[in-house]
Length: 135
Image (cartoon, rainbow, N blue to C red):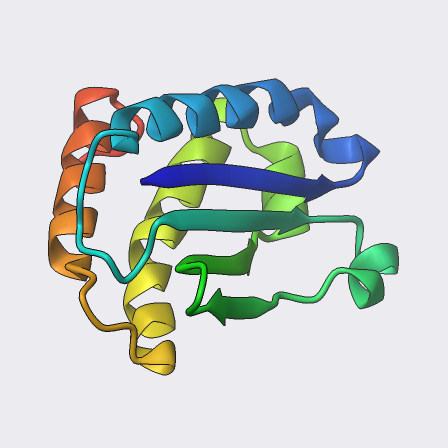
């Protein structure tokens, strides 16, 4: 399964950009050989965390391209807390958002042949092993 986190951030959050890129690459490598069903081949998550003056230009979106089996959606992190939190805290919040968001998205698009519970279980276990989140 292909995976990527695409960042839409402003300068105030740029100090956390490197760690988010690193997390995205680690998840991508982890999921690369995983098979959760033929419903989704690629999952791209847009991370929106921008200064409130730019929020109007960065609204969360969802899109499922059935013919290519690509799911794209974005999640929005709170700007002020992300700006003030450490990189580790931002990663923890991001992982929790990713785990929480997939159920609703898959249900909204009625994506067949994608084992969302297995996806979440694998990703959660990986995040726990990496100490990105805690039980």
